[in-house]
Image (cartoon, rainbow, N blue to C red; front, side, top):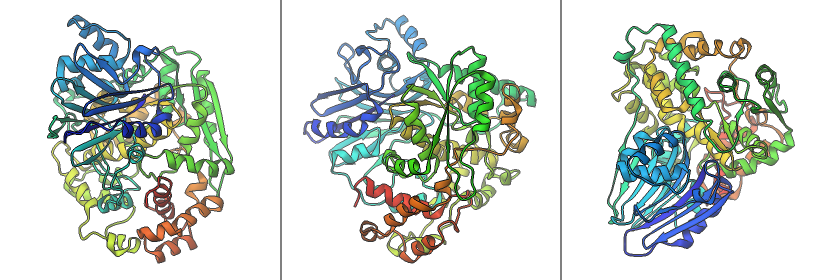
Length: 594
């Protein structure tokens, strides 16, 4: 796991190595174990390394293969790299390291861009062909690893984070009005390729982009799960589906133990992380390190779920770490959490994960985490209302349950110059729901949430916060083979047991029932879900600052109304609307965006 960056020019100028070095600086936390640069004419790469596989200097990046004429930077982990290495060795390739990076380089030489179909893992990769001048950018199927782009005439820059691109300079930091509409509609999710800034885009998940030496480029989406019933599963009983999911999940968890360092678990005490812990114990992993976090109560809301994580830790005899956070520590950590965000994210879980990652990174480099199970297996409350609806009928039902506000309500929030005549957020959902490959409204919602909402909320949250402390997080519920299997499950089975029906039945066969048969949990951060005290003061100061006034995004009367009663207006997902506005302004100010 690492941070990468680079520049490619198309107008005859050499690449600006100093700009690449500037981009590398904000990526230092993602890769505290090494720093490297490579440049040749119009192409320059930078890399920050977190050593997890092949800890020697042989695994350093940028990786240069003079024999094959290839240069590469890579962020992520390829879990089947040993099998691919053995296959490539059979084809006559020689290796000078035991790293997964070198497997990608040789694999690209052998199979071209089709190498992505053979990779099982999470990855953002950029490769340069010496002889043709071609540059290839690739991102994993579920977008677990980020890849941001800044394009101007004659130049393309890329980096593992948006702030890294800002550090290089010459970026259009104007707010993108369509992205702003998405942000305010989907609790801060901005679907790719957009970001909140006009001058920065992101390579979509499951996408390969090929850039020729003259600047011409093409993109191809190479994977998308089909949410339809497949012939190979015809006649499956509920027990058959449980057996198939359990076998696939076992494989996904096992794959993510591949490392030359220990692998722990972020254990919330919910079904998902508990299942991971139970399957690792079942596989014989001893002295497993697990980590839970809790906060002070606020506004009548409890701030920890230690009672449930303790059940799992005691059941499997893990080396368990309880991490307690006071209110003052939370306020002190907000600045770092906001700075760690590649894009503004309103979920209170961001702060929880940031604080948790800080503590966990002091004792371990790699953890498994339970993100993705709700989107993949149907665990959210907005899924049951879609039962029995066609994709076309499901658009309005999904919007009612999921949107923070509709297009008409946007006029209460935004200054007139930021209002759009059309409703791009609803249009996006309608296009996604009615695209072929989803049989029912629930299928379409699961596909949308897996391909878009999951990527740019919980997955991005985990990547940003763990990597801000040099910690690698692996997410077995986003194993692409498991996702493909879950997509084929009949929708009504997902809705059983109050949601996540198949996964809960699997859980009953592995872990104690008391962590399954309970209200849905999360990382509770009461001081943000219920704004008061110092956190409320930070939000108020940001929204009433001179910088916010000059920016002119939000109607002052609406902000004043929210500040007078900061916990009165919540979204359908119980998010705080004042926090949503304040977080955007805090993020823009912290990253120096005027």
